[in-house]
Length: 396
Image 1: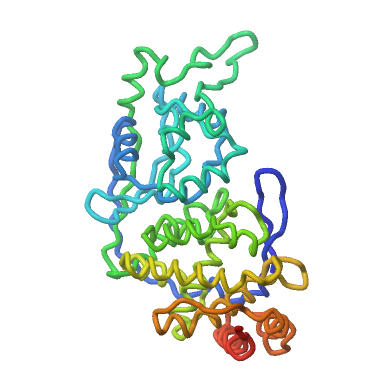
Image 2: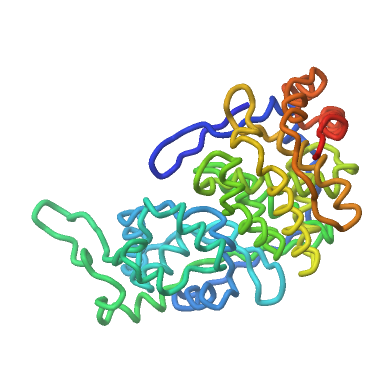
């Protein structure tokens, strides 16, 4: 199964995996005890929440996709006192909230007060910068190569009757600035009471709130739910030149498929023996567990991955591509686990280089191919792929 992604300059297919298990998304849904509390926060408070990190939009869990005109309409609605859609926040801990729904609205407000608007053609690079720094540095925010001035772009009310707010920015609102700051927006704060130690309700809320528009991908949802030092590490290694060479696209995928591929590799390496469908739930559970990884563990996993990349240095750039000339998740995942499995159990790094012929043999192996083409997330097929890779992949 191949999927299209839209890059800043072109649309192309870059990855593939076999047909997933037909029951992939059909896993049991628990009955939840959830508290949903409405709160009216003013604009100034919401801005300060974002600035201070009380309200977290981790890692640009989704690229900011609104254009200036759409953002301007939201700002105009706030200025003149029209109601705007409510925002959903998840209470992760005391004074710590994750945005479930409303990122585009919150970021529009944030950018308007900052008086800067991100250039659409730089969205991929801004995500990469955010992943490397954990925020957008001020020198980037005020760099006209990445951001432009956020002046309101509003259409004429009638021909030859310009909108009186057109061209204004936050600093030129005059007496309207105070009114804008004090306008309130309804926020619904969601807290899961039971089942305890299980945040699956957030995942369901994300998916269902976004079902009417441009859906978040599973990995975009995870990025918001399971932000951690481990995830910061994954986003950093995702920008490494050696990894981009193997993936075959120069910049990180806008919808985080490359991040999900890295996540799957680490999850299978550590918890593959406990794997049961669905893959979505498996990766969610692992992501939650990874929030508890300490600095030493994260540092080791990064060095392990870097040593894996070194073991691939003699391979062609399309080493993990299928016959369809697309990056194959099943090939990469199997080889990564085969190469890193023994070093991981000994808390060591990978030594040596992958023998190219052994990788070629794996890609032609009938059992591996059969387990890679249909129902790829079925437990039997996952186990068979990993087993065949362990048997066939050789190092020198």
